[in-house]
Structures are given as structure tokens and as C-alpha cells.
Length: 169
Image (cartoon, rainbow, N blue to C red; front, side):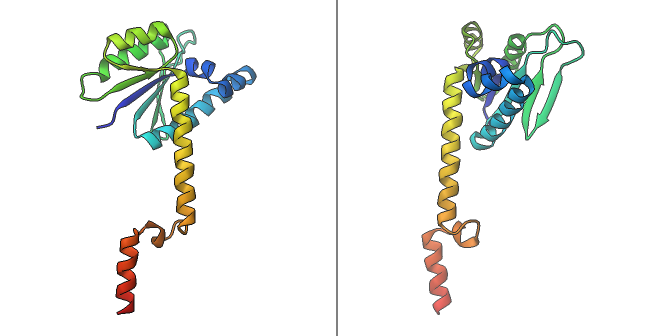
């Protein structure tokens, strides 16, 4: 069973320097970049990631979308991201899974903590994302040193030795 990570999209965009710069130029680009980053992180971490965007002042917007198995949720009209996040936390807690909420909104952190979720400040999520990228890069470099994506690169040293003994017989 996978744990959940619920991300307050616009809060993270405002907190991460790269995304804040993109937001100042074009908000859609910052949103798309965050979606890409979290899709990669979800693939690495194995978490069920829900990315929540506040659309409470935009009539007709709202709903749930999936992109690269990442759940992207826009709030309904007259619903805030905080309200939706709190509802998701209530839905997911108690399922023998851990729920994390990524936001730097202190008031929201206190509310979700009281509902059984763990808070993950924006800076800490950014650190985890960067660490996951380094780990993926390290694994790819290791794999390329062992011969890339060949059968030989997938075998352990013990398996290689056994096959070599069979070949020589």
C-alpha cells in the first residue's frame, strides 16, 4: 500500500525559486514545470501524489485529472485549496497509510497535523526532489558504466561468474 503526498500547488510555486521566477513570467509554465517535477518524484518515491490547485475564483473550473499517474486536482467553484486538502486528508487517513501534505502555510500545517497527516514544508519537499534526482542520475551513471541497458548490466557478479563457468564447460 502506497502512502499519499498532497501538494498545495500554488503554495509550492511561490516557495520554490525556479517556479516563482517562471510564475512571474507565465503562471501556466510554472504549473507545467511543477507537474513534470512531481511526476518524476512520484515515479521515484512510489507515493500517490495529489497536486491541488486553487480555482475557487474561476467559474467552471474544477475537477480531477491524471497525468503520468499524477493526480491533478483543481478546486471547485467557491472551494479553496485548503478546504480540498483538508477533505483529502480526512479521506485518506485511517487507511493504514501515511498522508503527507506539502505546504508552507503554517495555519494549514496545523490543521492537517490535527487530522493525522504529517506536514512537509516546501523547502523540505524541494530537498527530497533534488535528492531523488541525484539518486536517479547516480543509478544511470552506474548502469552506463556496467554496459548500459544490456542483459549483462542486469546480472550480479555471481550470476556472471556462473554463466562464464557454464560457457567454459
